[in-house]
Image (tube, helix red, strand yellow):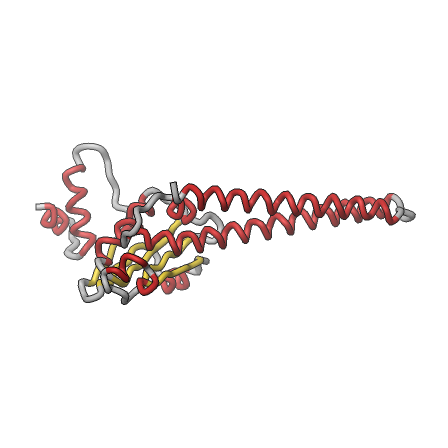
Length: 220
């Protein structure tokens, strides 16, 4: 059986089961074990499930992550089911937004966690998960809420970075011009300030438009 094939490889735990499923493919297309995708499930009530990095593991590895969670007590479908205990949580890379881990404590958590397994297998970002259509009302759509929060955080951070870069560039231009002409008129300074303000305004429009398109796509 698949499980016994895994046991032959010297593993008798969850990885052994996964290795067993890979064994039949050894003589076909090569497949390797992706230990990022190991899932843990505890079939309590409510169920507890996780995949990928946890905050504790990230700290031990010295890896920076951003996190967001959302409670089942504020989710439409779980309220209809009277299953309000628990939450879902996502961890992502603060630079790229790639999903690095997820946890679910709640109704059918052992089932819901597989959406994050699939997302991680394709190295999806929180923005891509947030934009992925989910039927309403379903339990699965609860993942979009922490994904949207993290995606919004990334957009805000990038906007701040661009504003800082524009401000620094404008400062360098002003400083250079000041050295070239110490008798610069106040009107000229106002023109440069207006130029800087215009760039900051355009940057805000760019990022706001990008956020709106992502949110709009999630409702299509």
